Image 1 (cartoon, rainbow, N blue to C red):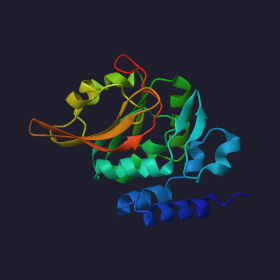
Image 2 (image 1 turned 45 degrees about the vertical axis):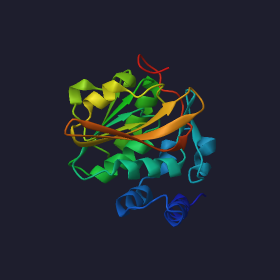
Image 3 (image 1 turned 90 degrees about the vertical axis):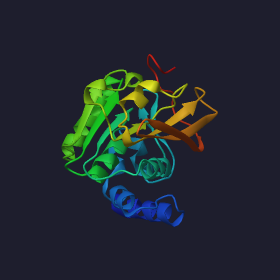
Image 4 (image 1 turned 180 degrees about the vertical axis):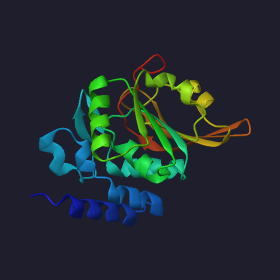
Length: 218
């Protein structure tokens, strides 16, 4: 029988030792959220705590744990914040966000593939994540009804910097983490900060994500 808790702790401690995990809040979230529950392919569950992407069906993947940690750190999440996630996927990253913003926070997660959305909802229900709402829609449009958002996380690569999402970001220190680039290569991870009408865009690293599909995607 696989000891997932032991494997999870070993991975999280390794990410901390490597300097990927920098804050206590990200450490605590990754130590608590059971990644194996978000891998629907049974034969791959035993690989849940290998630091690599895993298939989740419908041509999509769950990001490598180091990338989940990095994006959470770049977003600098705080208790009680409202977060928009574009690309629910398996739901693992939304669960990390939910842990960090706490019960008074809110995660709105957008997913274009209904089967993945349903799977994620089922896991959230089973693990009692009551502060996550999954909406099936074109994530490249964002979700105007819930704007403005304190933080926005995009988990698929956009062909260009998405102005829709920037518009929906809070102007009071709002932050967005978004990969931008080619469909399968030459992608850069940006951290966008919006404050008092000023917008700063910083490239933090090179990445490889599945493409963002939609009206303002590929």
